[in-house]
Image 1 (cartoon, rainbow, N blue to C red):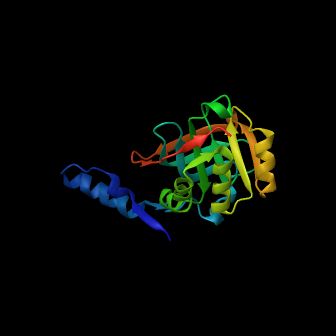
Image 2: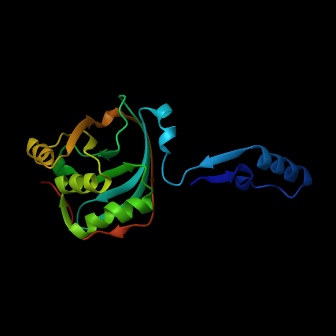
Image 3: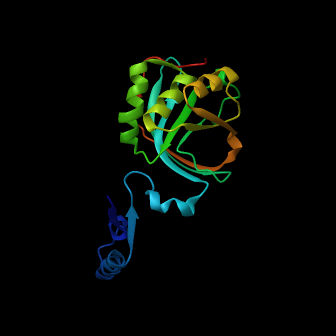
Length: 195
C-alpha cells in the first residue's frame, strides 16, 4: 500500500491568483511518497545503520502508562535491528522509569494491538517479561538494548534459554534520534519491576 501526499496540500496560499498558480504548479510537479507502516523492505538497503520503527514508551511507577511512539534513529554499527529497547536516563536496571520499546516495520496501532495489549494483559512485568513479550510478538530472536547499564547475567541467560538473545549497547551508540510520542495514553495497571 502506498499513500501519495501532494506538497501543495501543505501550503497555505494567500488569496491571490499568482500564489494559487504557484501552488498549483508545485502540486503538479512535486509529490511525496509516504508509507503507512515503516520503510518497505526493498528500500532498507540504502539506510544501513538507520532505524525507523514504532512502539511505545513504557512508564513504570505508581501511575504507569504505555504511550505510543515512533523513533527515527541513527545507530552506530552495520546492523539494523528489528527490535530495540532504549533507556536514555537510568544508570542501572533498578532506576529504570521509562523504557522505549520499538519494532521496525510496525505502526503505532499495530504495536498496540500486537504488543502493548499483551503487556497490559500480563499486568506487572519484569524487564525480562517485556523483552520476551516483544520478541515473541514480533518473531525476533534478537533484541537490542541501548542504555547506560547492562542487564544482569541471570536475565540474559534466562532469555537465551527461551531462544532470545539480548544485545546490550551503550546509549551513546544512538548518535541521533527523533522521538515522536502521542499525547494520548493508556493507563497500565501494574508496570515494570526491576527483576
